[in-house]
Amino acid sequence: MTKQEIRSVLMEIVAQIIPDEDLTNLKGDIPIREQVELDSMDFLDIIMELRKRYGIEVPEDDYKQLATIDSSVAYLEPRMRKL
Amino acid sequence: MDYDVLIIGAGMSGLAAGIRLAYYDKKVCIIEKHYRVGGLNSFYNLGGHEFDVGLHAMTNYVPKGVKLTPLPKLLRQLKLKREDFALCPQRMSAIKFPGKTLRFDNNLDFFVQEVIDNFPAQADNFQTLLKTVFGYDELNLYTNPISAREVVGSIISDPLLVDMVFCPLMFYGNAQEHDMEFGQFVIMFKGIYGEGFARPQAGVRQILDVLVRKYRGCGGELRTRCSVTSIQAANGRVESIVLENGEVLTADKILSSAGYVETMRLLSDYDPTGIEDKAGQLSMVEFITVLDKQPAEMGHETTIIFYNNSDRFDYRKPDDLVNVSSGVICCPNNFQYENSLPEGMIRITNLANFDLWNRLNEEEYKAQKAARLEASLNEVVKLIPDFRDSIVFTDVFTPKTIRRFTGHINGAVYGTPNKTKMGTTRLENLFICGTDQGFLGIVGAMLSGISMANLHILQKV
Image (cartoon, rainbow over all chains, first blue to last red; front, side):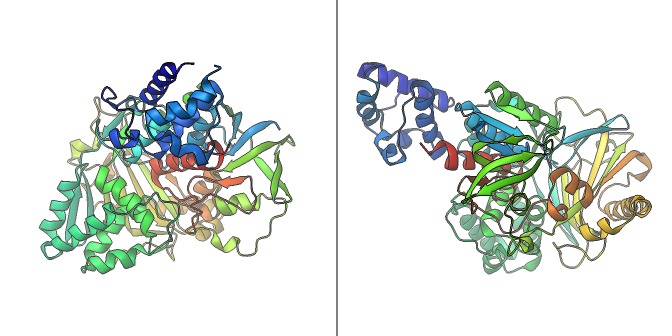
């Protein structure tokens, strides 16, 4: 997957987890949780959805690297490159 | 291993945990002793009438668009839509004590105004209480328990107001006599006064049907009429689970909603020291009456009344079979439905003593059910229009009924007062969810299942 594809997958996952939030102006470089109402339980679901869909395991220590869309793409790119 | 996770009990918490785990591809099986799911919150048919048990109303109701409160959190976590539960908000509820009535609906400002009008000297103190409650992080699993009586008593100086505020919160989810853990108080305060009551037109059936359908849709397995006789433990781990039919099941992790002491009792190496005395003591009776008309036709339009007719509100195990001097009067008809329910119904809940009920022989048991129903009705008609001539059918459930359907020792409705917030036990792969984990109410129970599934299973790689 390209970075662009990973980004759109992430956006789709976030939209699925918080269907009642407007994501049109979501900025890639600001923590997602500062822009929309997404609590720690919802955040866990981003990780879970990545595991469910692509078999990617994100250890708890790495959760903070998924704070923004940009940092998530950077973190996931080496792990999703071959998908 | 037969399963990734085995869940004991298909009540609200077990089903919610099951949905989370099955949705995220865990191989899950829920084991339920009874043929019907729900545990404390279930339903039955008798004499051609449909009854709910447990649930009077769902707490934590918020209108569409409100976010980050427990109900929308729960819906997100269970991948359900708001419409799935088909919740209809209440009309109006009330707390009635001698000489004072505080009404509340699903709008906190209205309740605050009621408090100010009835207790003008406490207006500022009540605002302080609200700040304390809404500033408290009750879902934090790492806080130490503190006494709600102490916290609230240090803010509100009128003991009558203190008791009135506590009354609904205790009846709807407190396992402790007289006092309440402050975190629990906050959960119930927000769920009842801050958010509010609602009920699906079809009652608890609606909620359970949705949960079971979702769980099965995610690939979860549900075994009913299947009871666990022992949990085989060795080297600090659960090795297997033995069922009543002799079958042995293995799983990586076990999540039990059977109650803390109740679960410990199933262990093959059970040591009762320091555990048995943790069992809860508070039980209740419920008197259910079916009426030949809608209660509103008799002038009874209130949804739920929490009452106390004596000098002091005494939330403890009574010395008699039942304490009718305080209780809850729920009218399932008085929610804002699109169509009214087919039958009028009034349900009365009172505190009861398990040991005394358990001691009665069959004949006495039957006679006492009838006698206590009459006593409770006599008390209740002091507060609402006399509906006794309209009763066409009655049923009574006692602490013994609660024990039969929940397995709770002493028929303790809300389990042990010593909650296990983290859900851990001395066995590394056995966890507790539900009532004894400590998030109470229907929404709380489901959130408990969700939190424990997240914390101990999904978050672990």
